[in-house]
Image (cartoon, rainbow, N blue to C red; front, top):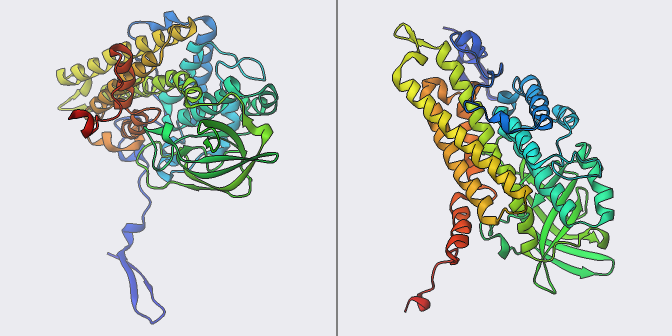
Length: 437
C-alpha cells in the first residue's frame, strides 16, 4: 500500500493517507450496472387513470415540450449541481425558451397559460428536478405575479417582458428571521422620504436572492403600520445578500439572507396595489396552487424511477417487480399520485371559475405534500441502499420535499387556514392565560 504524504514547513509529515483515498469514485453505471441512474430519466408511467384526458391540446403541448427539455437538459446534470449546492446558470436560456415564466399572466410578453397549463408545467419541471421548479415558481408565481396583480401599468411594462424571457431574474422577500408562519408581523420598515422610501430590515430564506436582478420586498409602512410592497434593484446601495449554506433539500436553489440598511427606493418602485397583508395573501393563494403541483410532479418522478428500477434490479433470481411487497408499495404510490392529480386539477378549475377560497388552496397544498412525503418514503424503501443515493433520484426527491412541505405555509398553518374557513374559528394563536381564567 502506498502512502501519500505532504510536509509542513518544519519538515513534519501531514495528511498521511493511503493513495487509494485519492482515486476518483467509479461512475455509478459502472459501480452498479444492474439499474439505470436518473441521469437517463425513466419514461413516464404514473398516469394509470389516464388523467391526461382532462387536458386540452394546448396543455398536452406544454407537457411535451417541458418534459423533453427537462429530461434532455436537466436530468444529466442535476445530481452534480445538487451535490455542489450550486445553480446551473447555463440552463436559464433553455428554461426561458420554454416560455412558461409568467404562467397565467396575459400580455407584457407573458405566456397567458391556462391555470392547468401552468400547473402542468410546474409538475413536469419538478418531476425531474424540484430545485428548478422552485426557481421558476419563486420568479414567476410570486415575484412576477405580484407585479401583475398589484403593480402599476408602468411597472408591468418595465419589468414583466424581461422577466418572462428569464433575461432578468426576480425573487420575493417576505419571510424574516423572527417571522415565518407569523409573516404578517414582519419588522422591516419603509419610511417615506422625498422622492421615495427608505427600507430597513432583514429577510431570510429568500430563493433566487443571491443572483436576482429584481427583488420584490415587503415592509411595514412606518406611518400607516400596514404592509407595503417595493421593487429593489440588485445593486441598490445598502443592500447585501448572502447565501444560506448547509441545506439538505432544494440544494440547487440559492436561498439567501437579505440585509437592508437605509436602502432608498424610488416612488415609482413602490407597488401601489400592496397596501395590507391581505394583498400579499392574494398572491399566496394563487401561488399555492402551483406549489401544490410541485409535489405532484416530484411524486411522478419518484414513481417513474421506482417502476423502472424494480424491473431492472434482480434479487433471489427474480426482478424486484415480481415480489408481492414491492408491488404493494408501488401500487400505494400509484394510488397516491392519481388522487393528488385529481385534487390539484380540481383546485385549478375552482380558481378558473372564481370559486377557489384560501381554504381550498391551503387544503390542496397541505394534503398533497403529505401524500407526497408518504410516496417518497415508500420509494426510498423500494430502492434499498440505492434509496440513499442522489444518483437514483429518490433520495434527492425525498430531501427536496421537506422544504416544500414547509414553505408557502407549513402543513400545520395551512390546515389551520382551512380549519378557520370550515369552523368559523381562528386558532393560530394560543389562548392567553387570562382568557382561560
